[in-house]
Image 1 (cartoon, rainbow, N blue to C red):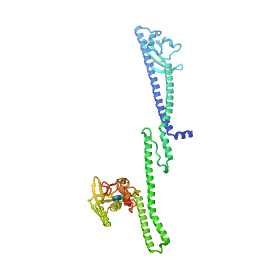
Image 2 (cartoon, protein in one colour):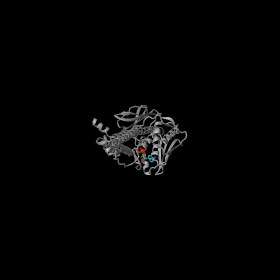
Image 3 (cartoon, rainbow, N blue to C red):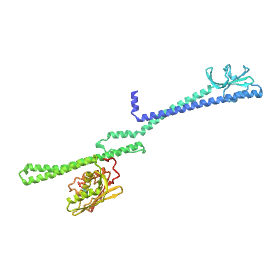
Image 4 (cartoon, helix red, strand yellow):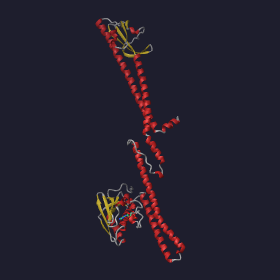
Length: 458
Ligand code: ADP
């Protein structure tokens, strides 16, 4: 019993089939009962009215012809095929009795039609005084009706069983076929691991719930695969960027070990190179740590911030640090809801790039403006520009455009800026013309409307 229960519990197909068969059987039984009770009621009603008709025929015959003969088949056969037993009493004496009664005597009953048991069988009986001391009693045995109802019940039970059995078998086959994709899905899920993320579930058949489930599952695999690959690329790129300064440090320490300690020039050069490499590693580790913090959606300290003031400060700082590039700004009072430190870092990375990737005596313009519900900050440079094919990957971690590989950056600045701007419910866009310059536009929601929740994170 427990094994049967476990088997049923382990299969949706069997459960669904049994569930729908139970519903079907209940419906059929209810319909059968309605048919049986309806037929019983209709047959009894018909017998009832024919018995009453027979009594009034007898009464008419007595009134018009002054006599009653139960041998006249016309008299009681008004009831058609209905078998009627009739007894007529005059002043309490039985004067006539229908031949089909044989030696049966009807029990005395004066009243409307009711059902009684007579000699072991169910009989409808009715009695009436029809005047002149004449009393008529009519009865009808329900044998035929009972037989008809028994045959009908048997037939209905047979049909119900047949229909339920058919529904069970065909239902099980069709449910099992319908759920087949689930079995494929389960097998595929078991097969998938990090080394096999390119597996997909074949999509076929109608676009039903199972199709949509398989499709959603494939999309999830797509995202997982992308995430996993970018994680692998990230680790590879980070290791690569750490390996270079480490190799430099190692080769200079080897050099020092061999001759450097006594050679002042080599000693000086080694110390400087090792310090530079250490600094570069420190920068990379700091950037990575900061990126990890930004990606973990930290709680930002949102305040109402005037973009004009922030831009003014950044532009002045930038101008002070770069002598041969002109940094100008055009700004008006525009308020946003932002974490000043984070936003400053995001904008500074863009301004820093605009200076780094500029031409000799080039210029950088910082402009703020309003566009709909957004404050927009454009950072425009007249620098080396970016080739169109490089634009889609520009905000990826560790991505550096080939021509600028000689730069000292790690390719993390734009990824960081984008993450920070996204944390502010904003966006960042870039347009560029190769060798002519680039424009990075930062979109931030105007204050108000406020960002959802005080320290909202995306
Ligand atoms: P990096 O630290 O290398 O500057 P970023 O993420 O800031 O990293 O930039 C990624 C790459 O995008 C850079 O290596 C550079 O090739 C390109 N880039 C970014 N900003 C500009 C710009 N204003 N003009 C031209 N190229 C740019």
